Image (cartoon, rainbow, N blue to C red; front, side):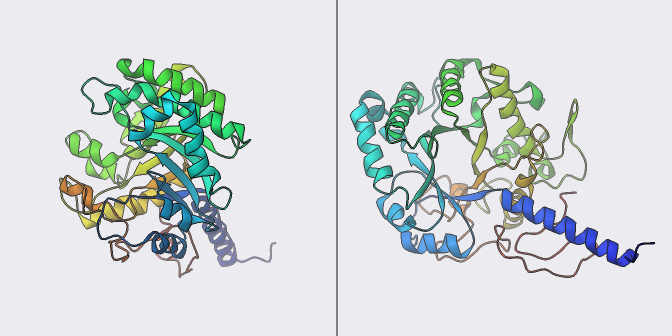
Length: 370
């Protein structure tokens, strides 16, 4: 007979479960996007200090703001550094411009600023009528010129050069296994995917269940969008989907796979939920979505199980110069640096007593999505 009692075995099993969950959260690689479209935001030094004090170890910057880059020196924060859409043409048409951009915004700060990705453009769409349509022709050549400038310094294995797209480029998303890109964007995306395969770089994708829900609330339930559905909502062959985030992300995985160009990782470069200003916006909806997102992404998706999804929450602050109104309310923090929500980002645990839900109190809730 073992000397362990049933209570001791239960306690050990509980501890193992909590430690395993803790590791998943640590692996989840949560970052936060630092947008600056507000006239009342803290200084860059204060912002970096806020990231560090809240154990946020990854940041996305949308342009090479020099004050932010200076503040990031020796912070240990990993960075997605953005190339603004307005710079694409000059970087695409002149390799010297790309080399100068890399010198000014990368080499002048590396390695004290831990630049992980360079995102060349954000949500550029070649679709007719899109405001960024004219820019699409410049995304790949600008990316290649930046990549060559990075490669010339021997940094192409440490700093990956890519772009960020949104899910409007997906033509078919249901069922997720049949995900495919729109036929009118294939001539834009296929060569870019070929470049990503060559460079070993991920595709950055902005994934918003919020917009899918408000665009079709009849078929896309709020619980499915908020990770609170008690059961599988969509069965896709061997894959069962209990939340929309996984379904959207796996549709992107399938769309890439279905090009048959090669395997490309996906990083979720934005995801969030506004707390006010529009349909289905509320403090509780935003809190529930973000809390569940932070806890969920460490588990992977049905198509990529047990593979944590590197994910960046949009955004650090409420930004009062954005429009329409709901765009002002995506922040995790108010402009005065006050935290809007009670959860954390995988830092120190405050272990508590197990309750009815086989849970523990911590900076990140560990209870099941069920």
